Image 1 (cartoon, rainbow, N blue to C red):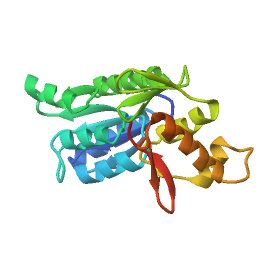
Image 2 (spheres, helix red, strand yellow; image 1 turned 180 degrees about the vertical axis):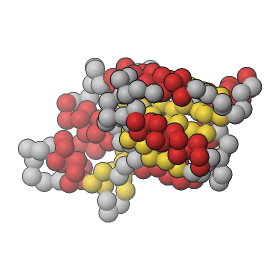
Image 3 (cartoon, rainbow, N blue to C red; image 1 turned 90 degrees about the horizontal axis):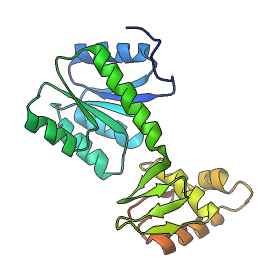
Length: 227
C-alpha cells in the first residue's frame, strides 16, 4: 500500500464496523491513505456521528449491533445527509446488494475484499462528491450552487437574492447543525451589526420556499428543514 494515490488530507471518513480487528486495520490503513477517520463500533454510535459531524465519505458494515447498517444509512438519508457511502458486508447476494443500494448506498463491497479495491472505490466516491458539489440537498429538492436558485421537488426553480442564497447555502451544507444567529450573521452578513438581519432573511426564504424550509430551534438559532 502506497500513499502516492491518497486523497487530500482534508477528506474525513466515518467508519462503522463492529469487528474490532478489522476496524483497527481499516482505520490504520485509511489514515495512511490520508483520511481523517472517525470509527464507531455499533450502529447507534455511527448514526450519532453521521448526524452531528460532517464527512466526505462513509464506510458502513451492514450487520451491526444496536442498529443495522441498512437502517443507519436509511435514517441518515432521511435527515438529508448526502455523504457518499460504501456498504461493506459479507452479504453478497443480488438481493442484498439491491437492498443496500436502495437504502442509499453509493457503492457495495463484499467481504472478503482487497484493500486496494476498497481504497480505489473510496477515491472514486470522493471524486463523485466533488463533481456533485454544484448541488446541495434541501429537503426533497436541492440548492443549485451554479445558478444560485432552488429546485423544488416538482422541478420548479425559485430564484434567490444573493443574501438569501448565501444564508441557505451555509445552513444547507451542514444540514444537521443548529446555527446560531450570531454565527450566521458573521458568515453571511458581516457588514451588519444586528443579528436581526438573520431573522429577516429567514423570513424571506420561508416566504419563497415555504415555512418548513428552515426550522427554528428556540433559544439557539436555525437549522435546515424541508421543502
